[in-house]
Length: 253
Image (tube, rainbow, N blue to C red; front, side):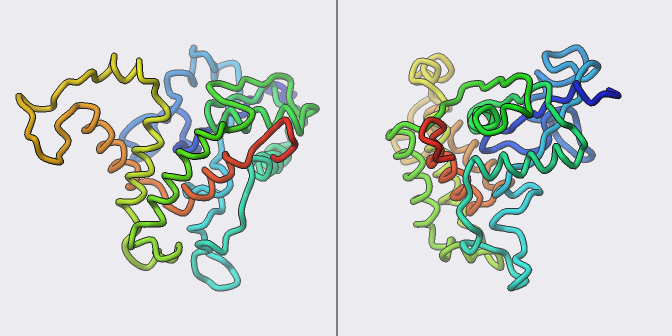
């Protein structure tokens, strides 16, 4: 609006990007929060001005490990510096400044987006009127850090990873797929997985081979294979590390 008082910053999770809702040109499916963002929806775009940007360190637009290092004219790879949730939010403040917005009506996000929401509240409370953190935490538990480390090790154990210098060849697709499979298990509870999949077999009978016999196995394979088509392995390393490092209460953000 004219006063720029109705702007809401929507913050995406680990696997998300700036495509929050609707269909972009050539997009095969709507944005990740299409059920929530749009005319007449919870975040009503007839009333509110919605903003969503790619996170720092990602691979969907904002500078990350796959971006070109101006000093070498090659992708940064592991020369990209370690980033924090605080760094990600600081970049977003520059975006808001660029748009001429003094104070956001709200910031909202789930999971890693929720961590960013908490960080906005902790470090920039004067810039927001409301914070809506969803399905998130102020710091990872030791178990969450452990699962993320297993995912990172899966990537680094892939022979195609090459210490992060894989951009001129085949990416560490198998390692990244396993990392995504491990991560996805942590996004669902045992009860919800039982309700969604049970012990249902994909075929009429069990093959007794090391294939995806169960529906839950097929689901994880699908998630892993789909993820590698759109995400950079090094970005996965950097962003999961940023999440593990975050601790709003201790100021390590």
